[in-house]
Length: 196
Image 1 (cartoon, rainbow, N blue to C red):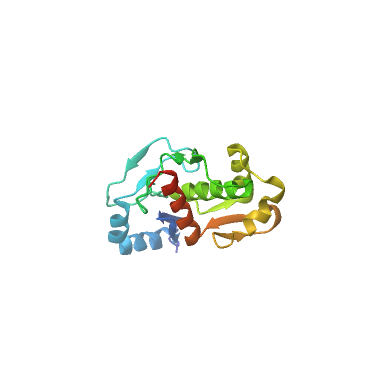
Image 2: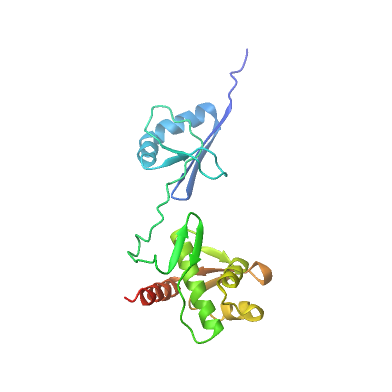
C-alpha cells in the first residue's frame, strides 16, 4: 500500500515586527490557515507586501483579503512622522528615508555638552524610524560629520549619561538606546531649538 506523500509548507507573517510562523506538512499548515483565516485577513488589510525582501523597496501593493493566502512575508508600511509626540522637528532634524541628519546649531558651552545634544537629537530622529539601538561607532561617526566630537573621551562621556541612555555591550561593540528621560530631554531640546 502506497503512503500518501506530503510536502513541507510554511507561512510567515511579520505584524508590527512580531513574527508569527506556522510550519509543518502542507495539510497541517492549510488547517492552521483555516483556523486563523479571519485573524490573518483582518490583520493584513492595513499591511503591504514588500516585493523584494532585503532590497530597497521598489513597489508596494495593497494586499486585499483573499480566499487563498500564499504570500510568504509581510512588512508593515512605515509612517515617518512624529505622530506619537506631535512634535514639529523639521527645523532641527531632517529624516530622509532611513537617514537622519541634525541641522540645527545645538547649544552647549563645551564640546562634550554639544556632542551629547547632537546625539540626543540624532537618536530621537532614529527612534522615529523605529531604530531604537544605535552603535557607539555610528554615533561617533555622526558627531564627526556634525563637527562636535571629543574622540578620545567619547565612550567615557556616553557612559556618564546612564540617566539618558541604556548602554549595552562592551569595548568596540557598545551601543546606546534612548530611555524615557533621554526622550524627554531630546523633545525639550527640539522645542527649545524651535523657539517654543
